[in-house]
Length: 348
Ligand SMILES: [Zn+2]
Ligand SMILES: [Zn+2]
Image: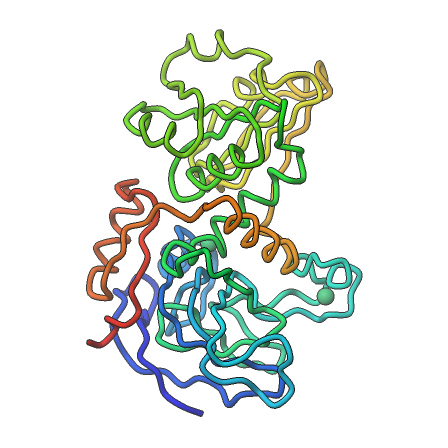
């Protein structure tokens, strides 16, 4: 057991404060990671504030982790000291169920172990990446290619895979028209990936304030959803709509923007239920879907794709003492586009 500096919330809604925590003794298949950067995901805030049901405190959030391997267990074969690695939303799964065998560990029937606010199969409470060190099984560490800087790679481990997975599954590529609803932490990654996959990308958001950024990320069009005309103009236009906003939307209006057989996939999670009319789907045999991160193999594929296409998150790097203030800005959509904590500043 050794101690490391981390940012921890003592109870629901409490501010994050620097403290020291224990990391577990390395098991045979574990790697010790010297964490360099940790992204701030909106779900960190929901969990610290206990907005998603009972949570475990004290809590060290963080599931967008990038760092360097600093020690390996005796049975580790995949990584060596000095390797650049990342950790996302999961740190363990049963490895034996049909989903694990299929590389879809997020659907593990025993329940995948979440990176923080979770409990390992041995009862150990998990602690996340707002920390100078984490210990994780090599099976859940991802290789970060040399072409990606660690700071812009960190958010790929959640925001990246969350958008890459549905874009791949629903066929974003050459000849396809994709709309990305909302251009925040998730949305800006969705735009970059959809464009790099070869799709023609339109951003749909209330304000057009981020229009220039949308073009820089690869979108060719940006329309305001505050204008009713937008829904007239774009009727029946898209093969795929990736909805990244966590506010309730007029779902029927968005479904009308799909071509027949098109799909609208939700990765944003409003707290109230959405409603829609079945006929909005039936007429054009349309699909309304959701998507949940991605398996470990696909997360590696996403990192390799990002490196090949020069895609990282667009970030603002902050120090540990700015995290509580940053949370407020994430909630008020004031971040462009992801805050990343320089973990060297924890306790400094
Ligand atoms: Zn996340
Ligand atoms: Zn499993």
